[in-house]
Image (cartoon, rainbow, N blue to C red; front, side, top):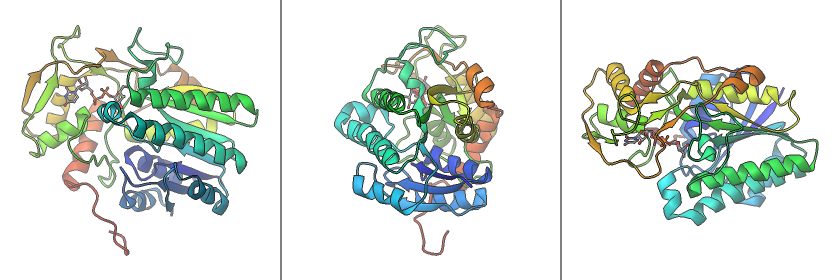
Length: 344
Ligand code: UFG
């Protein structure tokens, strides 16, 4: 029996990872500071995964509290997703981002080594590639983040790479996510952004729901078939399964290695709007605004390495991503309820 610690397990991607791990037979301990997560998501992940994840409300910058989690539980592997993730906010509050993400990551690997835990799967991002120089992007694409959030991901990758090189017991997977969207097919788990969403899919879904008047498309004069930017959207349940595959692959890959998690297919902003309209049966009013500074025209993953080495491949298409995201939104229009002692 493998006991896996999931940092950020009460968040959007983390809660889906908890389900996937439970279904694969892992015992799960969740650590989350609940800044952007919900204890109800952990409870529901337990129901959906058929297990009982243990929840510890701990912030990774609190070293003594983090160490007591390792002292209290026998951990075999760690999936590290905890962190702040809004690009714009990271520009306004860089110190907060460096502390939470970089210091948090350092505290984590320090505690792992002290307690003899050598298996780490890290939630990284395609943002570490900076502006795409060629498509699809392979894991050998040059690195270079273009904002503080991206630099916190890149710095953590560098720290973990150096740490893995310092002791041959380490095995580290750097998972570079492209654009995670969608929700668990049950409609019980999904993304619960506080305030106005920064990302396209949750924003479009809130427009479909009538919570926002219209989508502003950030530029339609790009050099793409319909003039809008292209991204590699990947269903969060496929993404979550990729973490289980990565833990298994660590048995075959000593040291530190990066894998892209995407579909290898690109979709434009207008394609997403079209599919979200079809999934919701609602009109999605939109207007075209100026380009958003820093946006790349297109970002698409090369998924070959993950397919060959992780034995993982995304199987859900954009239609399923939209349908599942819509089901979550309609069933939970206000996100997660507050936790109750008897469950929800
Ligand atoms: N977009 C709009 N209107 C909106 C929101 C987004 O037109 O209201 C467009 C963006 O311009 C972009 C596309 O929709 O072309 C996707 O935007 P997202 O913000 O959903 O995703 P990004 O690709 O910009 O950002 C993602 C992650 C970030 C990460 C970044 C770079 O969400 O965390 O990729 O890898 F930093």
